[in-house]
Amino acid sequence: MRDIYKFKDKIDASVSGISKRTVNKIINAWYDSGNAPPKIKPDIPEKDKLLLIEQINLCMENTGGEISRQAKVIHLAMIYLNSSPQGKKVFLETLACEFDIDIKILENKIEKLRTLEKDDDKRIKAEIELSKALVPPRILFLRQLSALPNGFIFLKDMREVLLKYQKEVPRLKKLDNDIKSILKTYFDVNLLKLKEINWSSPASILERLIKYEAVHKIKSWKHLKHRLFSDHKMFGFFHPTMPEDPIIFVEVALVRGLADNIQKVIELDLKEENKYKANTAIFYSISSTQKGLRGISFGNFLIKRVVKEISDELPNIKNFATLSPIPLFAKWLPNYLENGGDNFCKKLDISSINKIAENTDTNKAILEILSDRNWYKNKETEKALKIPLLKICLHYLSEEKRSGKINAYDPVANFHLSNGAEIGQLNWLGDVSEKGMNQSFGIMVNYRYRLNKIVDNHESYLSSGDISASKNVIKGQLFSKFGL
Image 1 (cartoon, rainbow, N blue to C red):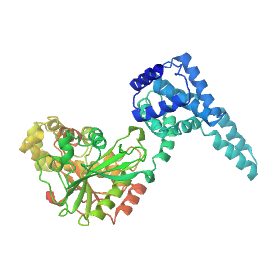
Image 2: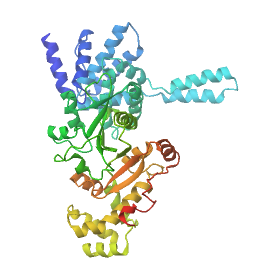
Image 3: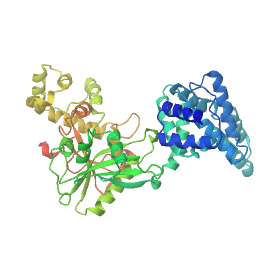
Image 4: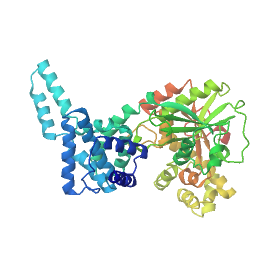
């Protein structure tokens, strides 16, 4: 028994990216199955790789009783858990390369189908054989893994590790797609439960919020409590088997009108407002928490569910919008201006900008000014750049597309526009944090969710790439409040 506990400690210490709860469940099942400690070394050297392949083949033979079949799968799960980072890479690479579809068999099936005469029965049989040949053998093993205690969480965590190595091993993309397809069934949005998170929620959930917040960092418990004021709300999707670990969560501020500055939404010294006097719900942060579920969409469903939840509770809330970052604008701008992109400057703007930078090339002058991180603290500089940068940013959000596609170039814009939102308002110096200035020179945007237009906007954007804007926005121009 001592050896078992020593080995358990060794496993726990070596695990990377797998939750301890999942590890313990699989270890306990492994002990119950009577397995001996894995003989394969943690780095899975070449000679041990042959043993690994043999063990996976034994699993896929699917022979013996249910208990013996599960024991084989658990043994392989333990080999993976016992592996070092290098060993995990070898394990995943082995699955990807050694248990992929057989190209020769596939070609034979295709050729057989091509040469068949118009005999429906024979063609149907050949088509079925072809579809089977398109399924990699590893699918059976992955499904066996998912059937272990917490097995689909094990697969989720395995995928998180896999994503780190995709560039090094391109064939991992196919394995990734296989695992993702299985995870989609386990993490179907209909299985997720929407919960409001508040200061009374379990500490384990609140701790995770601080850890997971990806948009506007929660610096302390005091900051977290502030974001849970009665005029602020948080909602998360939870899976039944992960009741204290949100899959995704959103933060909402209840305000009057459109919030135009994130510091005013989240800073600590703000007075708490009466949520019953608010008329607008501002979604100011949405964070996916599980890297292993990347590419499986939950955010659009979460926003729609939260809109309904808030509407039911607070009928005074008539408007729904975001206060969103523009994460790739600062990265995109230099290339745009250096390649002759329009800077949308009026004569007065050009004169002011050229004077500040002492450069007759206005595009280069803008970039020169922006290279000083504190440019916005100088009133003259800030005034000179305001209108040109806002115009360029509106062009970026409404006109720039992903290469060869109809989708908006900016990922946050694409997310909200595909959900049926419209561009509502640009906010000058809406985020003056270091992150906000580095991402978008402080500019933020409100995407508005007009409930009676969501479906039309969604269909128009996805079918033709048309981007909807509020009545305050005229395509290619700025808002009337700027006097243009």
